[in-house]
Image (cartoon, rainbow, N blue to C red; front, side, top):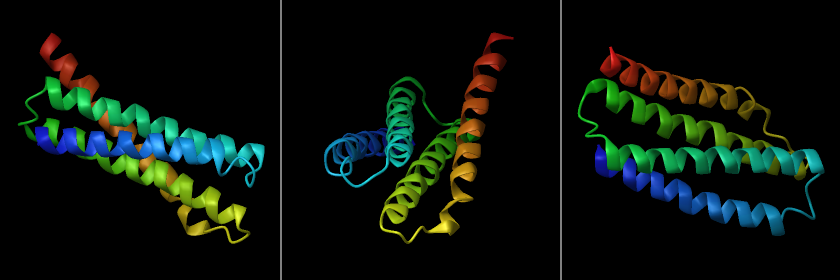
Length: 128
């Protein structure tokens, strides 16, 4: 699980840099200001959670069921949240908004919240 966290974290970071550059340069001319902000939100959240996955992979054993579930929440949540935003923004810019992606974004956000909640709980239980 440690290696998986590190691999996925580095992949998400790698892609966040590419998508960030793509958004800042290639998409700047085709997206509205609101669309560009949404795209940038996806990139930011992806990078934040890429870094978090790397930190977790280097600082936790990730052996317990709780720790594994936390990492899965961050991996799945990041994918659902950020990539659904990318799909929504890019499809809307082409005039064919993929509306089915709309409900996926908050589901991804829920997974991220769950991951952070599990992380908080793991610290709290070790504190008490």
